[in-house]
Structures are given as structure tokens and as C-alpha cells.
Amino acid sequence: MAFENLLIEYKERIQYIIINRESKLNALNKATLAELHTAITEAFANTLVGGIIITGAGQKAFVAGADISEFASLGVDKGTELARDGQIKVFNLIEHGPKPVIAAVNGFALGGGLELAMACHIRIASDNAKMGLPEVTLGLIPGYGGTQRLTRLVGKGKALEMIMTADMITAAEAYEFGLVNHVVSQDSLLAKAEEMLNKILLRAPLAIASAIKAINAATDPAVNGFDTEIEEFGKCFGTNDLQEGVSAFLQKRKPEFKSN
Ligand code: COA
Image (cartoon, rainbow, N blue to C red; front, side):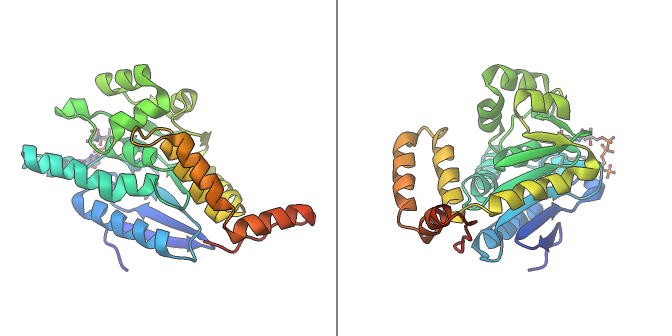
């Protein structure tokens, strides 16, 4: 499917989703969010795709937030709907997806942009990236899961400080806080993301999906994460991946996982 606000590229089993509104610093308008929903749903369903890298077009921004120009006309009901819809169709979709999703944060990741990066399973930032949740400068709070995911990633104290001051932090500070997994030069950002994703793609895909589910359960108050782990651990024994992984170990060879 052709998109207006996204570029889709494939590199072997990696699908790139590039937010492509460079003149607006890749701000997420409604149309872009709808396209993201479609692109991610298709990538998860496509057996040729092992994992996804999300990044922004250009050198300056990953995503500079939700598109502020769409906010002026919203009332309470439409504002609530915007947040709920976005959370379900894009941000939760990514976090709970069965395939690894890496955010390659290539510049400003503000507001909805940082929320998008935080919904991904792993974040790698370029050393010029700046991150923040500046919504209170607009009379708003984060609505795409930012208050929850930032708190889980950096702790309540830092989350309160970042959200209430609206200050941007550097990539080095984000690394120090545990908000990003790695910081590299902008030139090597995509290579680093690919290297990590390619390593994950050598592992058993169904076990990766189970690991994502069990780890997500750790921060979901609606489920007991230890029970989820037991269930997912058990399920692994019914997969060909486990047969292959264990046989390969015993036969002293590298496993070749076929499932998706
Ligand atoms: N929504 C809509 N448009 C945005 C945007 C956003 N979140 N962020 C940037 N843009 C647009 C600007 O309006 C400008 O468009 P124009 O050229 O048509 O006027 C263009 O992108 C370039 O941005 P500009 O502000 O000129 O770049 P800058 O280098 O001076 O500043 C930022 C960069 C990121 C500091 C600044 O754009 C900014 O503060 N953006 C908003 C960040 C924000 O509050 N995000 C949270 C939203 S909930």
C-alpha cells in the first residue's frame, strides 16, 4: 500500500517505517497516525518481515510531537477520543506486537515523538537527539501513554521533573536515565539499529514474541506477570523453535529457526 506520510523500505527481513513529513519535523497528524496503524499491522502480519525499525526523515527530527495545528479545534470529547484512539491503534499496538520494534531516534523526539519511541521495544539515539515531553507548555499533558511509559522507564521522580519542567534532555542524559538503550553518532545510527535487530532475528521468533508479552506483563496491573511468564514458558515447549533450538545445541550447530 502507498502512503503519503510514511516511507517504507525493506532490507532483508527488516522493515523500515520512516515518518516522512520533514517540513513539519515529522509531526504526527491524524493521517500519519492512521498510516502508522496500517503499516505496523501489515508488518506484523507479513511473514517476510522479522522486525521493524522506526525513524524520522531528514537529519533534524525523529518526530517533533503530535501535530499541534490539529489541537486548536478540539473539545473535551474529541481530545479524549484522540488520545484513546492513538493509544490503542498505534502506541499499544507497537508495545504489544509480536515482533521486535526499534526506534532509531535521529533528532528531536518530543511529545508524541518521544511517546512513539517509548512504545518501541528498544530505543537507539543519535548523539544530537533531544528528547522531552513539553505538553504542559501547550496547556496539555502527554496523551499517547507518555505519563505511564516515561515513569516506567526513568522512575517517578525524573518523569515528574521532565513533564512538569517541559525541559528537553540530551541523548547523553537520556542514556544516563535509562530512557535510551544506546547513543551513537548520527552516521552510525541505522547501522547500529540494524545490527541489533539482525541479532534478535537470529533468535527464536516465537520465544521473542513470548518474551515481549511476559516483559510487558511486568508493568500491566491487570495481569500477574509471573503467571504470564509461566504460561509463555510452557507454550514454548509446543513450538518447533524449541525443538530446533535444543537439537541444535545438542548437535553443536547453529539453530535455524523457521517460524514467524
Ligand atoms: N506540530 C506541528 N508543526 C510542527 C511541530 C508540531 N509538533 N513541530 C514543528 N512543527 C513545524 C513548525 O511549525 C515549522 O513549520 P513552518 O515552517 O510551516 O512554520 C516546522 O515544523 C519547523 O519547525 P521550527 O519550529 O521552525 O523549527 P526550530 O528548529 O525553530 O524548532 C523545535 C524546533 C522542535 C524546538 C520546535 O519546532 C518545537 O518546539 N516544536 C513543537 C514541539 C512540541 O511542543 N511538541 C509536543 C507537541 S504535543
